[in-house]
Image 1: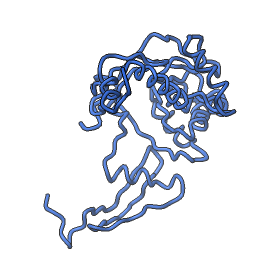
Image 2: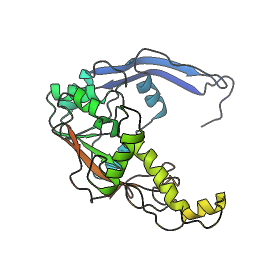
Image 3: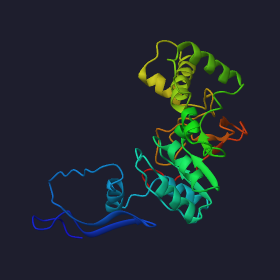
Image 4: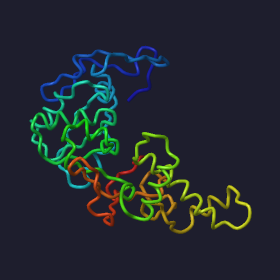
Length: 276
């Protein structure tokens, strides 16, 4: 490979085309990008902007290598705009592919996607991300969310454990009406509890040095979650991650359940790392 010159564009693409089954996402794009210039890519939702950038960069979602390391042999990535009003074509592709598992990673359109999967007759396994378990999303799915698994770093927030009861009482008293009980709100509350616990172990006036040392030494109890150790080894390539343990939630009869609240799992050994 030679260094770019004034006569040689940094990127030169001819006839770029991306298809997903019978859906053409990008059709015959010719593109040249010169050194030292900035370009914008605009278009309506579903026009193929993300598909085009993914094709140009060779991007593979981080979840793909994790699934492959866990033994999944074939992975098909079907992009969907988060604001797409009708994900039926993508749902039909999932159904026609014969997939044994559909992983729904659409934060803002999960309900519509699950509803569409149910409509086209998909009845294999489902996994989703945390927003897919929100009550409004479950209701919008019209039964499509039933059976779906969602990995959660926390004990079930609506459960009967002592810490869950404390969390529920705090949210009832202090949270704004309509606040969703999800991983984000739980993480905020748990962070406060965890910081207070660690600070209580420091003698004298805390300093930056003593606070960091307290977090990095030993294993700490983790509010509504698995004990953690901030030694930079919890997840390969991500030293800022202190805890990589999850429980599996499942949507049953329109309600989030946690079948086994003691069966913690980790991606350690599967996740290839952010830097390699």
